[in-house]
Image (cartoon, rainbow, N blue to C red):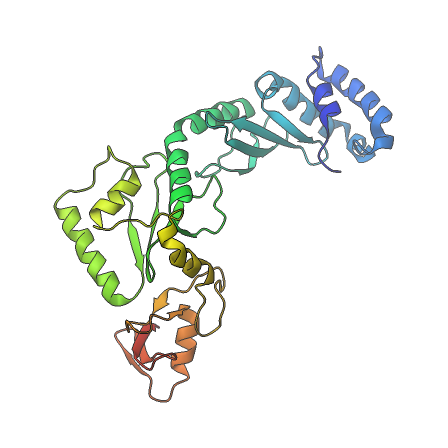
Length: 313
């Protein structure tokens, strides 16, 4: 059975004096609409199961009514939908068992862990969390609209991880705290080792000098503590950079994405700057006759320019 349409939603929003009355009316509804495949006869084979489901649904109907968007009675699933102050649509799918057990949260698009509870408590918490996370979503919307985002490819409302491009061969990733979006996150740098070391030193000095200001948004702080201008993806001056992100293929396998990972190894030679997946580069270096290992690194020659290159074992 597929999700049910507006006719069932209207039916569920009627008021009934008891579960038995609801069940009787539901059977009538099934009989009328079965030919249109609105529901399924197997639902009626277990009246106790149906009554338990209906009891929970009727008990909490007043709190659910305005949020209820989709109903799947065969699987006891309800889809709730809330539109926030910026017209972002947030959905949650919950599964009902019976009136003595809490609902199971099957899925939602909040950047927080799923938790089971009573349906009314969940609805209240869901709405309150959406209100409290507006600053977080405003921030990630700003990042996605103004920065060259490398990961995730298609961010959703629950994604609080971002990796953004800072130069042709250098990028930084961070995970934002949804409840405190302007708190300084941990940073991970990607690029050639000389650039990584350089930015780590700048970052350390900025932390020592307490340059992070929680009254400013995360992007301004990143630009300040790393002493760099974050490229704007809408700027005409960054057309080549945008092209690099789209076409930044590994120079070994000639693909961009390998096992959900982008190329993150860069040749140190300023004339080369070839990009490689760690897995591709490691496999290639291990095949060389003169490869050597040192301090957890495998060292060999760049397949593109024969400059010394290394990656982690």
